[in-house]
Image (cartoon, rainbow, N blue to C red; front, side, top):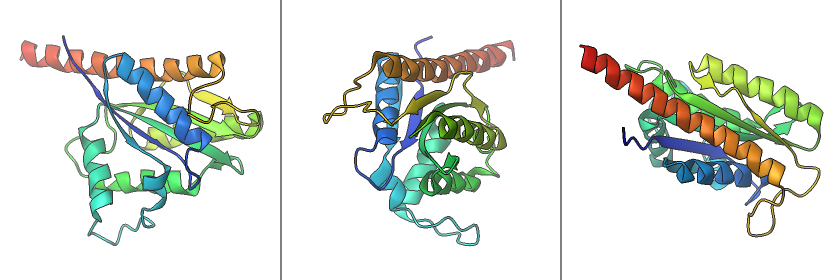
Length: 198
C-alpha cells in the first residue's frame, strides 16, 4: 500500500523561530523522510489568528485554510511552550478552532494520531504541559501518541539555522513523527480492508 499520509504541524510563538516552532519543523521533516506529506502552521500564522469565538460563524481566509487542512489530514503534531504549567494561549486558541469540525461526518480529530511536543524552561513545566496537551487530544477524539517529546529549553537545542544541536532531542522528535505516520498508515490499511470485506 503506497499511502502518503498528510501530517499537519502546529507550533510556535510570537517570536520568530522559537524553540517550539523549530521542534515541530524538525518533527515534520522526520515525517517527510518516512514518506508523509506535511503542512505547517507556524508561530507567525498562529499569532495572527483572531480570538476564537463560537458565536462568529464567518471565518477569515487563514482560519478556513487551517480548518480545511486539518479536515484532510491523517495525523497532527502539536508543539507548545510550557507557560505557567500549561500550554500557551495561542496554541490553545488555534486548537479551539477545531470546534468548527464538531458536526463533521468525521468529528474533530476522530481516528487521527496526535503527536505531542513540549518545550519549557524546566522539566516540571514540560510534564504538566504534556498532560494538558494529551487531555485536549482526548477531548478532540484523537489518539495521542504513546511517546510525547519533552524538551528542556534552558539549554540551546537548535542553532541559528534551525538545525538540532542534540542527538537525544532529534531522536525524541523522530519517535513522535514515526508514531504519527505509522498510526496513519495502520488506520488507512484497516479502512481499506474493511471496504474490501464489504
